[in-house]
Image (tube, rainbow, N blue to C red):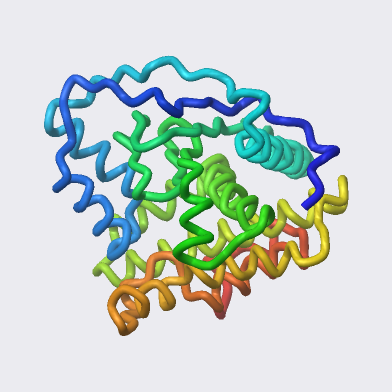
Length: 286
């Protein structure tokens, strides 16, 4: 992946080594509940923790001041350049559509951090909080990708960031709010999960659109990059993760889509470079 011509984003907060300070506390049971809700019901774990925190009286949060990442931190610089690339791409895309793109913030943290959605935990993996328009990531996740999922490469990592930024795009367009409202009105868990799958696959497609548009504008892709992203998408498909953890697959419990679906929608985005091709909610086939 070529990032030499990409400017670093000014919207990166480095909270590593700066843990959250909270008036109340969130127990391990709440964290487990959040992860279960995310896996089985398609809910944002950060949101679940946020609600539980407020109910327990621990809603008052003071986060230790964040700083800019050190200039010598290559991993942080990489993330900053990828974020900067998404900013320029989506600013241009929104402008063409007569809209204004508001840049998200990206927070680097270690262990745990305070968010408007509650306390974020490294165990959640990267996530987006719509209440503060921030993407949160503990960079140890990239090592987990390599060790647990056998996925490596800079573009695979960029895909992860672009997917979360895709959720920010959905938030700005009002798509996320409509999906969450539909989930609350769903007749059963399977129906709510199906909506989550459509939302996640659309974020995969939007990540592909970013890659296509950024490459057209600034030639960021190198040989093998697309294969890296597809390998990452395949590794985190619901069917593959369920097979690894349970030994069998429960389609009604899918919240992010199968490996084949995630690869298909990322590929659709990068091949078309067109947001209009990412409407998973009206597609006859996922």
